Image (cartoon, rainbow, N blue to C red; front, side):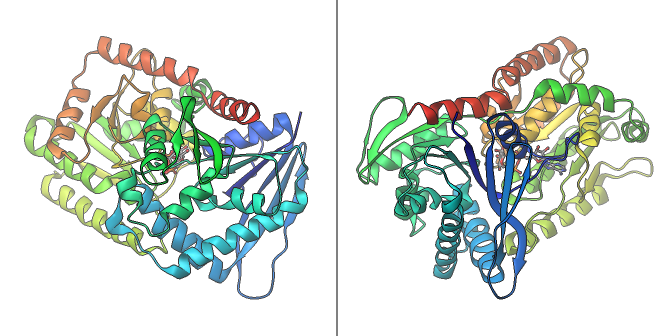
Length: 456
Ligand code: ADQ
């Protein structure tokens, strides 16, 4: 079998026996351990001047190849184009897009450099799998260097409709770059439709069956591959964590109150400001719940050197203070807002303790927290997932209480429904979601993608 070469912005070697890594890292690690190959990407380090070298390290069947970024590339490519331009644009947030020509120049430069450094490591029959919005032009750069390998691309975040995408001057460059891949994977059918709609309406291309299309002189295919988790592994961990010291401390601190839990990176796409508003509306409109419910939001800062991330942090601190100032009693704090991260084992215990999983992004590629919350529940006494209709996960998780995160009263009603649901209904909704999670697990995600790429 041909080798697998994975390219992603960050390379995350897995420490054996540790379960602290995210979905992408676990899936890539599993695939590479089985098939063997190379994982190439940024080392996470920057340098001020001089040149860089690719560092390689082989462990078992996997060779990790990483390189640092020049400081100016970090600013223009990572902080700039990837996280201040593409991230808001692809999450339908035009008002937050920060666009500068120097950003896109840096973005192209880093992609070309990555392609140039990866090229000598490639063997003609390697299967190449490129991940996410940081690396959209990489496949095309490899093609321009003469590589004819099968190259696939997976976008972890949403793909916006053409009317939104075209607000960015580089839209044609971005889509044309995507067309150089043999297979383009998206999280949901909705993202596929948005992409193919651009192909038809803006690129003037033609779309056939099964996501096959022709545009810009290229033939390719766009399909949905919803990323998953390993639900049974997580369920086992959650059951074990139920007896852990921290879970017990959390439980004791609740003194019988129902817990609502939210776990997110501190990111404006996660809808935390409106989530806090909805919780305030709940306390306002259902006074009987005051003193009987606690909302714990865990949100460690991310990308804190990007302006819009600093702003959302300030907004949330203000709202948290306001809610607690307005409703707290001497023996009850309605909102616990924690700006720190927790180990996966601790989170699984928290998820299992919570009566409600509160996941309300304004837009999200998939949202693995929603899936993890479901997997961690006690089958005999499961909690309820309150989920935004704009998370990719909503397309699969039919047992969730689905809400529109822009309508705070509607979200508050959803919370009330979740908090008062009968055990029979909770069990039946949970069982239906758990069965979907088992069918579309993380192994299925990468097997389906690689099978489609091989058979193109
Ligand atoms: P993210 O935006 O990071 O990922 P998400 O899928 O929810 O969003 O989380 C990824 C992982 O990080 C999960 O395993 C979660 O448990 C963990 N995590 C999140 N917040 C945490 C916290 N406060 N403490 C500890 N761990 C935390 C991007 C896309 C998503 C897509 C994933 C995978 O934005 O839409 O689901 O990639 O494709």
